[in-house]
Image 1 (cartoon, rainbow, N blue to C red):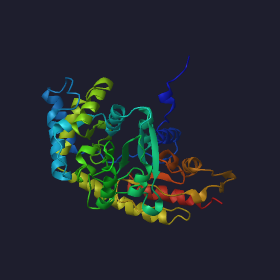
Image 2: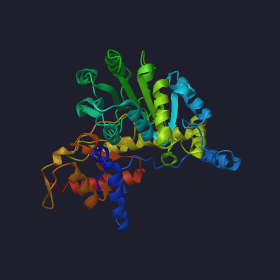
Image 3: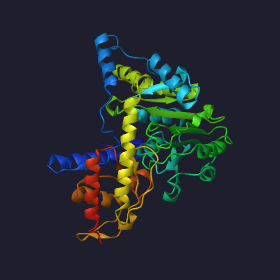
Image 4: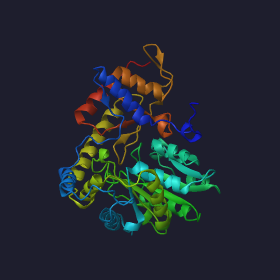
Length: 398
């Protein structure tokens, strides 16, 4: 009688949300846990964005169902942003606004994929890529980047992974969980491979585009020949500190956008009307608050890198974007703390939660069991204290 569907049994609970829930349990018991498990900005939504939502309420014109794809003025503003900043000639008809970038990806997967299709997933990957491919009853094919190559997959690896069943490629840049950013040359080499396969699409997740310390954010859709082959995913959660407003969007060839719009129309209909008014203010307004947040993230990145580098046994890349570290902690596997063996990343994270009172996420959830993910979207004092606690506990591992 209690039988769930095969599709729901094929996916796992989000590891990031699960660890955040455990951290809350510890806090409810009065334990001072520093939560570095969630990818959530610790800044408040900028005032001018909040004021736009208040004004929308006072105007009294935004209490009806919005168009499924989003208000036209918001989609036009998003298209203008991509034309001006990313050099991609999107129009409003190419854009579908959703309840977060996660829904945008789900819409795309459900609109495009059939059983037997394959999706190449660059690994390490954001946890939901795997789940959403499986939810669409397709097969994820993981292609792994290494720490030595800044966790970045090469064009040669992509070419070797393509089969007649390959329908799409998905990755993020800047990357969650590694913070890696693909260069223009690296993306062009991947695009050259894609263009040899007429039915192959790229799903480019650009949700962290503003938190990019390299000086150049390259949109795959801007590369020669890639406009008709790219589905761009983006949103407001990270760059504008709007996680709770739940506004994401996709931009794609019109036939893909139409399919995603049709899917969304049956699942949720439109995104919240008031959130869309706030999003419009974000995309058309002053970016100074965003730049201030990014400057703070850069300082935190450098601080955490220094502190991580001082812990014997931990290896890390130097992330060029987003707000994560993805250090290799496998040197601790097989060792013991107070008589208990640390077998894997799950054990490592539980050790940190129970004894250092720091919440992290196992790298296994992102496709790399040797690593753990640490979010530095937290106050500098908390980051310093968290790394001090981790170092102290790990000094007792033998």
